[in-house]
Length: 117
Length: 111
Image: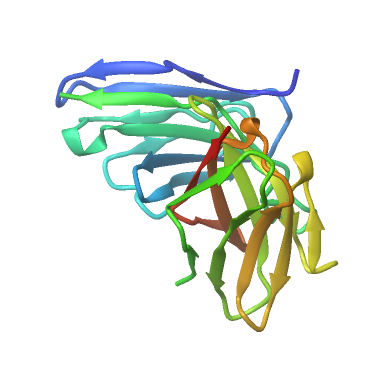
């Protein structure tokens, strides 16, 4: 079954304790991306990756890091979490056109709800 | 900078009546536009997409959307709401590799 898998689904942590949210897709997609969802703000892009070893900032990258060492995995790293990073996080992936642009047809994981105390 | 505005944060309809979700986009060139649906405690799922072919786009579950360049709108409709349509809906604009999401419209379906 085609899917994007995120872990953990729920996490409560404390300020400053490093954490990683993993994301894995089994569709051989080139494009992967992280979003945070906050009430009334829709989804905002944190980082995206066009392919292995190629990453770029989205709209709200501050306080986050990513890496893309393998095509299927795109972990999100919070080096020193703060309470304003309490949010619902989604990982997504999609194919790209031969031009390299992503198709916009995203496949989403089920989300990771993070609470930072 | 591009922006996507969903004109209603909440919409309430009765089962069997039409649904209209309004979306306006801003772009200086022909955008690619999408509607996604998010059911409770789930990720987003693609409903339909517009990529400069037909202006009336049909999607899954009986939804359709009409692209109107003169109005910079991409409204989503369904002739007859079902209880299973209760969810949050997002209008999305793609320009290059950048995707911009609207703020979402939560749909409540009354029996």
